[in-house]
Picture: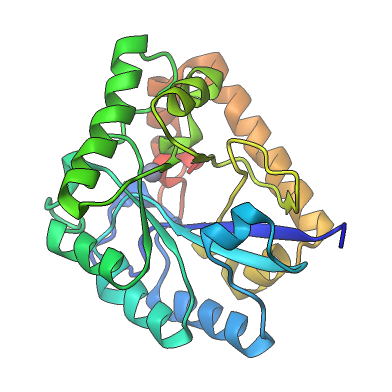
Length: 265
Ligand SMILES: [Zn+2]
């Protein structure tokens, strides 16, 4: 039973209609997203729920689907396709941006939850968590959770770190205020029985197309290594020049297709 691995995929917007420049190639054309879902289905690849994933009840090659940022396409495009394929997924929203242009409204968040999808926090307003004062860090994690819980009337215990930021301080705060599962943006696969936090995820990017998607879900080592090295290089750069300068840099250096969310998720 040992040796099984799963890959957690991180999606953002799944339509180029209404995509913002800063979303870069994290925004996928709908045909590409549909092609990816069809491929998972036709291969018979197991797409597992978070509870199966956490409990280790998954076979080798399983995939977990997650969506960050609460884009309106979560409800308008992703949900119908997921229901058709009977794929479970988790959606991470920022309560401060729910109901704003291009984002989910609360009725849509409720619809996702009613359809059996998991809803989690992506922070209050997508502030990057690196270097936040402890009080503000705690506010981002507790208020976001409380808003969603009040709206849905159910417990929220999963968190996706905005831009993969926050490091150990965010992880410790998240645990202390009651999150059970925290997702990051560092690429990597997850070995059954060895769940580490933050859970590594692979960003699904437009530029990777269907071939890069296949390489990711098939856990081809070369592709994983390239993604891991690229992530480390970007993270080192962000550490050196600071998060704000990094976001400015990545927006200037990488016009679409570029690096939405600062290139790190
Ligand atoms: Zn995000």
